[in-house]
Amino acid sequence: MVRGTILAVDDEPDILVALEDLFEDEYRVITTSRPAEALALIAAEPDIDVILSDQRMPGLTGDALLARAREISDAQTILLTGYADISAVVSALNRGGITGYITKPWDPTLLRNAVRSAYERHRLARDLATERALLRGLLDHAGDAIAFKDRQGRFLRLNARMAERLGAPSVEACLGRTEAAILGPAAEMAEAADQAAIESGAPTETTVAGGTEAAQTWTVTRVPIRDAAGTVVHLAVIARDITEQRLLEVRLRQADKMQALGTLAGGVAHDFNNLLTAILGSLELALPKVAGDARLSRLMTNATQAAQRGAALTKRLLTFSHRRDLQARTVDLNAVIRGMDDLLGRSLGGFVQVERALSDDLWPAKVDPDQLELAILNLCINGRDAMPEGGVVALSTRNETVRGSTDPNLQDPNLKPGDYAVIAIRDTGTGIPPEILGRVFEPFFTTKGVGQGTGLGLAMVFGLVQQSGGTIRIDSEVGRGTTVLLYLPRSREAVETAPSPASAPAPAPRRAHILVVDDDPQVRHVTASFLNGFGYDEAEVPSGEAALERLAAERFDLVVADLAMPGMSGLDLAEAVRERWPALPFLLVTGHAEAARIPADFAVLEKPFPSADLAARVAALLAPQM
Image (tube, rainbow, N blue to C red; front, side, top):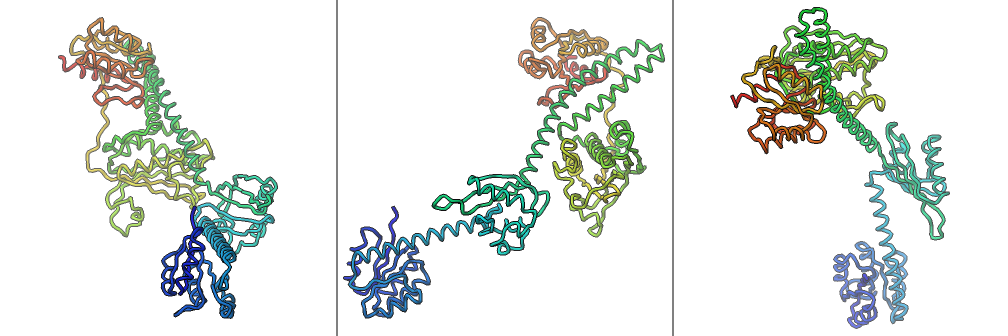
């Protein structure tokens, strides 16, 4: 238990001893016979609760001492005085210098009661001051808007955050007023909720929209406050801005949706690539057999080209659904745009006209061409969505040199002086309002309805150009359309052409026995037929478990296995083969290379593959044994 502290001041040592004897069983007692020392003790001891001082002391009278003590301490003060000093007591009481007095000789019980009352008043005052300080600190520093009202809804206390939420100029402008007096009819729902909380006597919580900004969302908690008799006399109102929390929830849902889409895309791509492998492989195997029939050859060639376009679309689907490291190389940007004719035509639909104005002398740039295609496609789709009645999407290219700080382009800190190849994507759509133009590159920010956009498209474009050393600018005017400019640094290196597949499969350098493992019988048959056509001896099994049994019974020179198989995956099989037959070459074939973490030292061939690619990989893996 914390004991109170009393300071006793008297120039007579016997009186100090008597006071100490009287109070030491209940309080901590400090004594001094000198007023000057008493003031020093008061300054050094902030926890003194009651000061007892004699009136007549040399150097400084008691009333003067207690008046000075009042300036540095909140302790209760009691003057000990004889009857002759009563005028000084009255004067001290009138000035507020003391809180009470006891005449000498004192009645011990009376003195004890006076000190106990003074001590309780001091503790109560300190507790009240602490509560006020805590409340003031809460009101001043809380991020929530907080207010206290009476039963009639009048504001008794509130913080600046609440005043701001109400649109009031200051806290003082709200005191004594109701929300209706401040907001008018807009406060009807709030006042009805206040009354309902008071009548129910239980805390309530509601979610409301609005505030100083229409886009804000708040949770409002109302807590009835009761008096000692249990009657609700006040209402605490705490409003918390949950706008950012709601945005985060939306972003989390979008992220979950993107993850689900990525997983779905990966599964669909794997199955679709299996189908394409079977289709393209079968067509490639069948075409030589109809070489004498021009009409049938043309039909099969058309089917092959359509399947190849499907393979390209599947690759783009995987690129969209799974972020990967940039595979940058120096490319002809015009060639990338021209190569998107079919993709743009299918993606934008018949209501959108695509125009091109490509500079003949455009500088090359170092960028991931697949990611660049995806970025251009995203921007064109945004343009299409901004033109619900149809319109024009125009793609153009030009060279631009940024020279010095006076160049207006340098308002963008990401655009450094130098040479840039610029790709412009312009639409004739509705445009972007100025108030949201600065947020369009934020991840997950979208103006489209729920389910119509992820808010990731422009953020992905921004990330691509930044990783490539460039930047992105956007100019838009409501009602006149939007132009997005991609600035890509000029590359001084020669344009790197994508490796073209071999026109014809390389013949088998020697006879080899190859085991083909795939759970899809059509893909397995095509792969085995290719290998047989190359001049190899092949065997087929439908699973990893069957492959291990066959390998234990026969000698093989190479294993070609699908990555995604039920039970034992191709990667599991490859690791088991490496452990038991470490010298046996192994080729993993997959329709979704990012579906598993494949170690870098494993050979991988992506589906769908032309026979020439398979022949080249097999020949390379068999070469060390030749």
